[in-house]
Image (cartoon, rainbow, N blue to C red; front, side, top):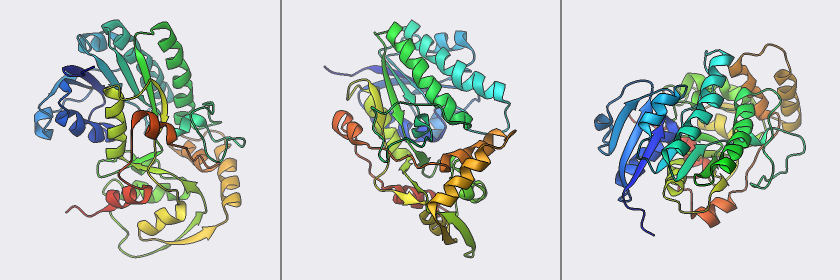
Length: 333
């Protein structure tokens, strides 16, 4: 069946995920119109997005969402706080309540597909997680990390909402750390001991001017390029595969030492066990601010199997995890 003439609404279109998706929707002949919903005004034409009409809106405002979604076929929900100085109440109001508002408004508008950017963090960082996690493994809240807790909770809540609205097909994408030239959030999510380095460098991506020694654990992780996330989102938008959850990640597994080396540091390798044990101990400290809770992400490895996305969506990453990091750090001056 032809998918020509689709109208797609995207919340948070100017973030990292939107930067990977919007050029693809712009060039896709199956997409006629895009509605971009964001709190802060922006001009789509300045970005070359001639198909997009901007609508000012807040995911905490159901009325604004319902007005924006009139006539849409697909809703892509990308707006989400991953860290920052907002209160926990504000974070939850945007992330959890806001996501439910978006889904319910999409259902009320008669949309056919709802595409949600979840995360590998939804699996949690549990001792009994398998070495390679596929989509049949349950999502479970992390012990402390608010982002992982909310991603797991939201997947459960969205599944319940979808059961009550079977005409709205639910797609869930679970990427790892997303990198690329527009990865504005990557500065806050590099693992554990690399977090200060990431905050300093990924705001303006660059390598260290001089190599410095850096203690890093042998912690494995996956990375993905924003363009590869965009392609997976696009495939869900057009219904290339059945609804459901899909793990996506760049080829290969890197370590924290690999990441440090790409930044120009001189990694001093620490055994994975002690480093992960230290992360678990730190994550249990009381009164951690939200951004410090990210240390739990290095308390256990979380490596995903991406077979389902390849076989059912027809998705293939163009970047390895290491290539995604190198493209993030590439000098574009």
